[in-house]
Image (tube, rainbow, N blue to C red; front, side):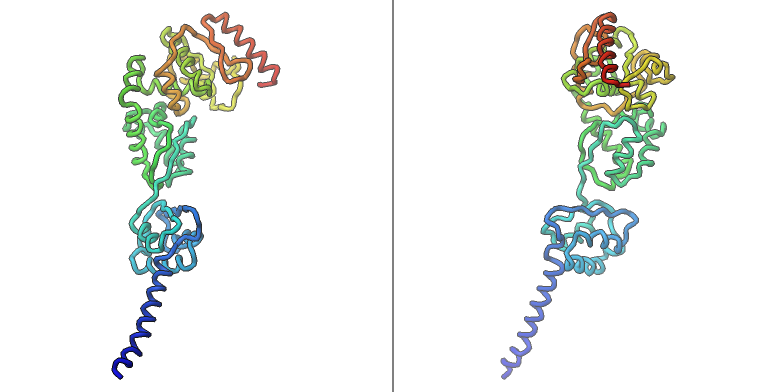
Length: 341
């Protein structure tokens, strides 16, 4: 009789326990995401538990969202959302998602540092990927004290950046980002490249400055060492570089396809028709190919170059000014025939 009475209570208890376990699994341990691919949620300093839930709601299953809300209240997350970029992966349980957010286990993003022509443009491009305001970035990069503290000035700060893809955290601070760029810069120049620059009698900043001009002169990677050799010949003979891209930079008219004689009088330290030697700094963030073209320049006797009249993106090189004038006349004729102004 006692056995039957115990059985009467045990079976319902087991059923209740199994129901609790099933509910726990359903709400807390089953798949949180309703998507078959990885998604990312961005939590900033202005988010509270309501806005976090609103961001997660677009990614979560209904039971996953309900479970998250329960766990967030009981695991002290609701009052302390942690800023960051978090991956919500298929197959992650609700408990795993909350643990990731609560512990600040961010997913780094692949940040491309581009070959920007101006620091304002770079600031906008970085801001589109990082939790940094573009105005904050631009203000720093145009601030002489900020640049000087890192060994640059406002003209050479572009030399700090090596175009590449870097894994960084979305909420990295500006100071930490710049520190990272300095480490990447030093790693890039360490060893062979630094030795090659020294043999050319150029500083790293001067290599970047010349490389930036070469990048704007030609997109043909095979031709860049030839162009580098020509400009180095002019520098060694104390001839002005007379590089058209520096005029575009001075005028901030990057869309120009022709440079006319009247433009060559612009009063700017970047005007390499009026000012001898290299300009004060790069006219863009130099590409790795441009830098290596300078360091591995082709040795030749050419002092002049002109775009090829077949518009192939290559150039005709010349030793004498007379030969250069003939090349320039052919190119001007081709421009006129195409109505390019």
